[in-house]
Amino acid sequence: MRKLAFLAPLAAVLAVAASPAMAEPASINVTVGDDLQKQLEELGPHDVQRQVARLGDVVRRALSRNGALDGAQVDLVLTDLKPNRPTVRQQADQPGLDGLRSLSVGGASIEGQITTADGRIVPVRYDWYSSSLADARGSNTWQDADRAYRVLAVNLAEGRYVTR
Image 1 (cartoon, one colour):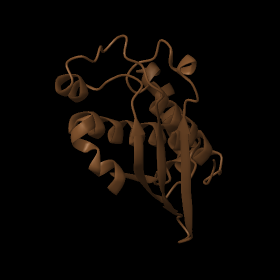
Image 2 (cartoon, helix red, strand yellow):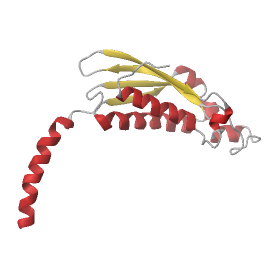
Image 3 (cartoon, one colour):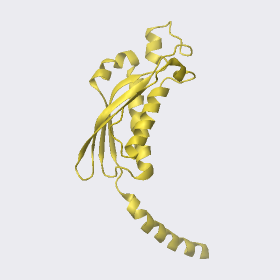
Image 4 (tube, helix red, strand yellow):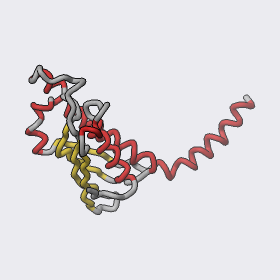
């Protein structure tokens, strides 16, 4: 019983300390842009949908780490997506492609807007593509796109919305 007596004050202190951090996190919405929509069948709808989800997860984690953009609506559009290796759909459509040895420069372009908690609308824009095959060595299918997501997420968390 004495052990439980210690927990009650601790719980009260934690509840008070955590209340400012309990602000509503940013709401993140990711969609596929028109140009990428045209490439959907070539890349494979499943792969593209996984990248949409991945972008949302990476941004959500980065923003929640420091409470950046709490209460904001973040609307992102994945406008371009280039894989480093052939996707499952590309390998099925072109059997001569080798999933291990076929290599390409990859990356992603993201645009959108943020509606802050106070109603301001701020544009978002970021893209990153590897510049040479040497950058892509040893990569997985979406390594460069994932790098673009991570850098965008850090930029958003630090207040840099339009870069590159």
